[in-house]
Length: 406
Image (tube, rainbow, N blue to C red; front, side, top):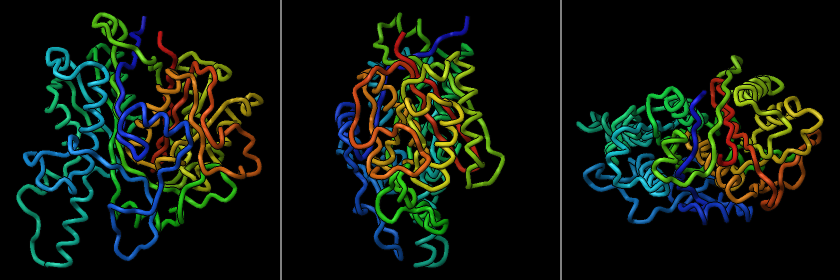
């Protein structure tokens, strides 16, 4: 019999909240936290919007880790979410348990601010400007490595780099380690922050919203970015029961696919999403009509939203209009490598609280998108099975299946 995997802890750091309760209530209210940028500037580009995180002093990096927290922002966010997830699972200080655990964290840009700072200094100052610690600080693998060091996690330590799919990729890797029997407990998630490269790149692609993203809306004009981190504790079911852990949900499995089409544009007709969803449903023994809620990738770009809706209609058929689907990126922006990890936490909370979050900023759905986008505010309803969808540049699609606690 295949080993079963459950979720026993969650942690988030987002513009909607840095604790599970406030985060969930903010999502249900439909409050959009995408505002004009305050803490980040991109010279030459005006009127930029984003969902920025305000961290308390307890989450600041100590000087021993990095003397300038602005240049270790991704690590700061990741450590904070990991600490919250482990605390939620009653694992802080449990070195005997964590010594046999592993961690997988995903990121898209990681500490890219290091590269940006170096480039700026090079342009403004000229000559060699990289100090001896530059390469150590800009190495993205230090995200899971320092999380493991802080908590004594001595099992496998891995970095997942699947672009905007990195959070789901990390969760899938953690699941595989547990199902294989290599470990009994894994900490998985993702972290990313706002960078100049991010804004400049998406502006050049004409994919950046002029204000706030409006997923699935007729007038959507692009993506809005956010920063943050999400972390989940995944545990083998019997191991969780033996230590008396509270069990939030079951991580039933996942499905992956690749569009094999274009480095940035999604494949036609949502075919990649269809394959990932059908693979996930088949591998977990889930019928389409058993799905209660879909957490969409929902970036607010023309082609992503179109392909995702076409995929829903193909997978769910006549039942598609009855399946609630929403994008929390409409409230907290697109957090890149952290996005699907944060969205996985939202799915867990949907299962726990028997309610689903809304799609904000949606006033007029695109004609032909005949789906239930849960507009306005959240909805109380029976929630038994959730799908968490994500996609990344390169055509990498993932579908995670979460079910109510056994």
